Image 1 (cartoon, rainbow, N blue to C red):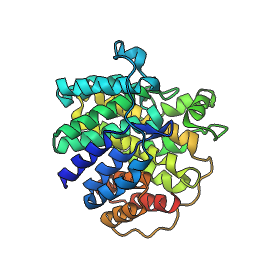
Image 2: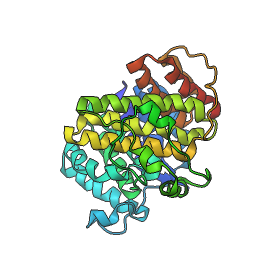
Image 3: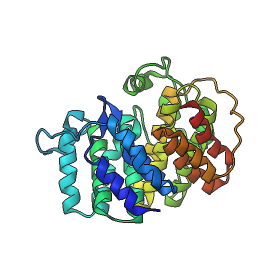
Image 4: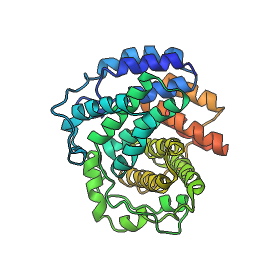
Length: 338
């Protein structure tokens, strides 16, 4: 991995805000990390040259964060959260910051359509490889974004059922009106018959090792579901795969006591995104010729869309763990649709 290019990309991006055009997520740090990770670093600055024109400046703060609980989920405090974490990351080792803030933010995993946790997952992966000032800053900005947009999944509850992941996904109900933004869609979930039981339906992991296996299965099955449902809303259904991927990548840096809550939250995010964006009727998976993981990412990189790049990054992990070529096909399908 070409580490200098990623740090240079972070330095360019850290002058920009976590959102633009009012509410769209800044995918630059996530896409840049994925591109460099998979050997496409030479194209990162050219990609950023185009992407940066769309972004807003870093927001200014209003007042310091005093009671962090009161400021959670308030996007008007985004500048305050950024300043708070800038100071925190300067004063405290990044692993300590992550250990403190992960359990505070985890109940709000739906933040900005799960982009908060996804950005944190990319930052943690970069830091696990090498600690640099730019990567530490990136984790701070990612945590700040998560805090500012903190949002729980309605009806999320501990896992108490006996279902496997695939069966639980298949049985998820759908909201009656699949239109509007994600907050409007999530607001329908509490009134959907069977939603509370469905989100608690999977068999809980027995131990930390089983938690990682469970979460890997969530990512795998969500990538296969993308082939069946993504025709309805490919951009948003990418997050049913990438949100649990971010949590899975962060697990090794968490205390074992945090693994089960993390798995539960990740599952609830995948379930909710599926319930509000996937249609009730699936289509047969498209016939897509898959070559190799490297070629899959090459094609995603040529496509250039940030969601396609991030999905390819996630399903390559699935393929590495399972050998399932269909997971790679999900990224190629995204490149056709987006």
